[in-house]
View 1 (cartoon, rainbow, N blue to C red):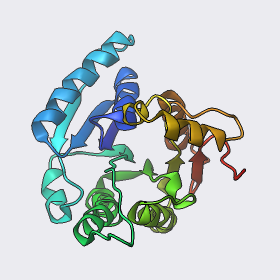
View 2 (cartoon, rainbow, N blue to C red; view 1 turned 90 degrees about the horizontal axis):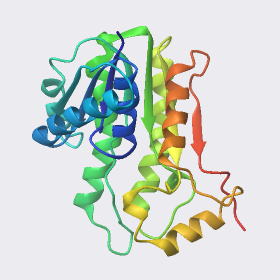
View 3 (cartoon, one colour; view 1 turned 90 degrees about the vertical axis):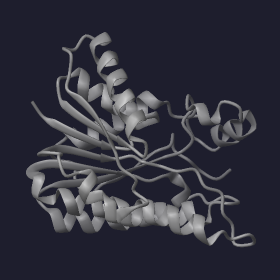
Length: 240
């Protein structure tokens, strides 16, 4: 039985990944800021995995807040060996230079650019040479928009973090993935104008789905020849 840890696994892509690995029989740990919610979602993930035809899996939920890096070691204390580590946690943010919110910027920067490497640091002795680490960023790194000052900065930073981790952790594989708007994400369902604008900027004239992003994430974590790759899952964005 393999062991999969998903940081930010209570909703969205993280939750979909948890169901996938639980359904195939992995021992899965998911984390979220709220411990009770994480445990509730863990039970739901196990039930979803069974509904997909898998055996009843071992799924646990833990409380972990990436924006509080000094607490991460204690939060992960009872996590054992890790075969796959996915850092998926995200926080929506709108921040621009004209009305710059320093506290929001510090929180979001800490979440990914301090929280992500702190998790890896705490787990480094529990990763094997065959383990895989996946960092989630976002396409704002290449396509900034009004209010994306912090988001663009940290997602560009995720690329640099992936590259240095791939060198420092070798032969453990480390990759990163960056998505554009996800078509079936609840966050975008009431924003049709933004969806249409984003769709018009893709060569496929369609937005990626959650299932497609999950497939790409699985590829990065499972293919033993893929390492230090910064993968864009965006339908081929371009400027018209």
